[in-house]
Structures are given as C-alpha cells and as structure tokens.
Amino acid sequence: MTDITTEGASIAFDKVGKAFTKAGGATVNALEGISLDVAPGSITGIIGRSGAGKSTLLRMVNGLERPTTGNVLVGGEDVSTAKGGKLRAIRRDVGMIFQHFNLLSSRTVAGNIALPLEVAGMPSAQIKPRVADLIDRVGLSAQAGRYPAELSGGQKQRIGIARALATGPKVLLSDEATSALDPETTQTVLSLLKDINRDLGLTILLITHEMAVVRDIASHVAVIDAGQIVEHGATYDIFTAPQHATTRSFLSGVTGVTLPAFVKERLTQTAPATGGEEVIRVTFAGAHATDPMLARLTQDMGIPVNILAGAVEEIGTRPFGNLLVSLPVAQAAQARAFLEQHGLLTEVLGYVG
Ligand SMILES: Nc1ncnc2c1ncn2[C@@H]1O[C@H](COP(=O)(O)OP(=O)(O)OP(=O)(O)O)[C@@H](O)[C@H]1O
Image 1 (cartoon, rainbow, N blue to C red):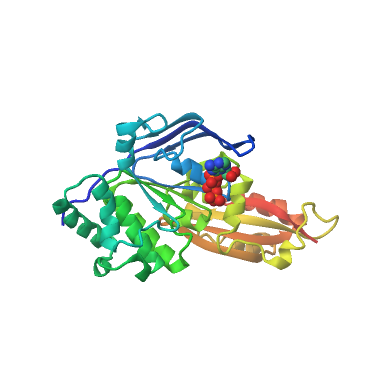
Image 2 (cartoon, helix red, strand yellow; image 1 turned 135 degrees about the vertical axis):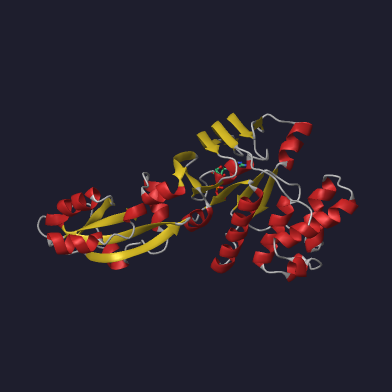
C-alpha cells in the first residue's frame, strides 16, 4: 500500500461576517462576528437550525464563499483574500463531503475517486495505485468497478470520503454528510471518519443539525444561532453544562431526555400556590455519573423523587447522565442544594400542579 498520510491544519475564523444582497436589494446578515479557532487534528461540529448560517461558514473554509468582513485562515493562510494559484493550493488542502454525495453517475467508484487526481494532473500510472489504496481504506474494494446507482447511500458516502481524501488534504469539511442516511449507516460512516481522523491526523469540520452526531464524533462544538456563535467549547462540557437556550433545545432532542407529553402539557413557569411538584433536569458528569444520588435524596433526606425520563450516555469514554425528575415544591430547593453540593448540575424546567 502506498502511504496516504497527512496532518491536520488549523482553521481560524477571525471576526467573520457575511451579508448577502437578495433580489430587490434587501440585505441578509447571514453571519456576524464569528470568531472560532479549530485546532489541528480535532473534529469540530458546528450545529445550528436551518438558516443559521452553517453552510455559509463551512463554504468559507475552501473559498466557495468570501466573508464580507473578517478573515478565514487555514493553516495560517488567508483563504478570504487568496486568488489564483494560492487559492488553488489552499483548496487542495481542503476536501469536502456532501449530504447528497455529489458523485458522477457516469463514472465507476474508481473513476469518481480518480477525478480530483486527474484534475490535479497526476500521471495515470500513479493514479491507479493511489485510487486502489483509497478504495481499500473506505472498504469498497469489491465495488471498485460498479456505478453509484448500484450502491447504497452508505457506500456512496464512502466514495465521497475517498474522493475527498484523494489529494491528501489537511482539512475535511463535512456538509451534513450523514443526514440522508439511516441511523445504522450513519454510525458506520461516523466511525470511518473517526478512523480517518485518528490515522491521518487531518482536521475535520462538520456541520449538522443533530446533536447525536456531535456527541458521537466531535471533540469540540460550536452552536450557531441566527448567524452568531452562541456557545462553543469541548463537547463534553457543552453536553454536561449547556449555557444557552438554543444549546439546551438541541440537547433536549437527544434520545432519552425529553419530558413525557403528559408532563410537558401541564408544565407551568410559576409554582402553584400550594403543593405541586418542581420539574428539574439533573446532569451527572465525570466521576459523579454513576453515583446513586437520587436514592440518597430519598433515603437520607426523605424527599420522594419521581423519575420522568433519563439516559446515561458517553462522550468518548466519559459517561454522563441526564435525568428529568419531579419532587415536591416545598422540598425542591433543599434537594437541589444537596445535589449541587455533590457535584451534580440542576436546572429548573417548570412546575406541575
Ligand atoms: N447566495 C445567497 N443569497 C442570499 N441569501 C443567502 C445566500 N446563501 C445563504 N443565504 C441566506 O443566509 C442565511 C444562512 O444560510 P445558510 O445556508 O448558511 O444556513 P444553514 O444553517 O446552512 O441552513 P440549512 O441547514 O438549511 O442548510 C439564510 O438566511 C439564507 O437564506
């Protein structure tokens, strides 16, 4: 096997803004004041709702979009002002994969992967072994001569990944690469991306609207809302102690931590005049993830706790748990203080009468 090695480049967004002028002359501020440093060799997720500005941000990294204000640097080189040969050189360092794969239907698996090498002017004697290596890396050796229409979505995305790696990039951009795939195939594609990141050391920047994708692959995450980064940091920290309402709302979509409908419908933001239950989210992180704190709340302090929903999950190999519970309003402050003293995080979600 020839050596397909690379190393990751840093990506830096420095006070980036982007305004689009729509037909009719109105201006849309798609991005405002974006500053973000992506470490070489990291996998960073950018999560946001539809229209938040994710694609615009991603497309700036390979110069498909230029910022209106600020700069974007890849490995210290300014993409935002690069032109001609310099821009082409930066683009060779940045591969990209897409939600709908963007493959040529008239070319075989091998032909699709060879394309960027042909465009780069590599002699065909060198292209052949290089393509064979790439096909092997993504596990498609048996399908090399087949056409995209004959392959599954997961296999098509593997071709997309091999094609993106062909020129030995230092950065891989992923534009919702698993959004069109079923959950099982999503997992196989995410683990391929993790292997590639580990083996080749290249930096991966991905955009997604699914927190589960961030949890399963990203070491770092930035949450983007209406063109601004509202929160960013290590994935574990963001999952265990989210600060912004948008982040919390994305997290509530991750399996196991949504309120059951019968509670959600009755939830109020003010406590009932008498009685009632306070509904809280309890987050267990790190060393406390497996402590039996709720049992102690009942046994030691005599506070009855209703478990409404919950899950223990892992980020990397670090466990964290999220539980939604209700307990009597009269004892809730005492219970929260007890849990906080023992290193758990609590958040009041509302009240039920
Ligand atoms: N070429 C363009 N001309 C005008 N407006 C644009 C253009 N490209 C993007 N926009 C606007 O910029 C904003 C951000 O769009 P962008 O595609 O980056 O969001 P997104 O988070 O990637 O959304 P989605 O997840 O739906 O793809 C939107 O309001 C969009 O309508």
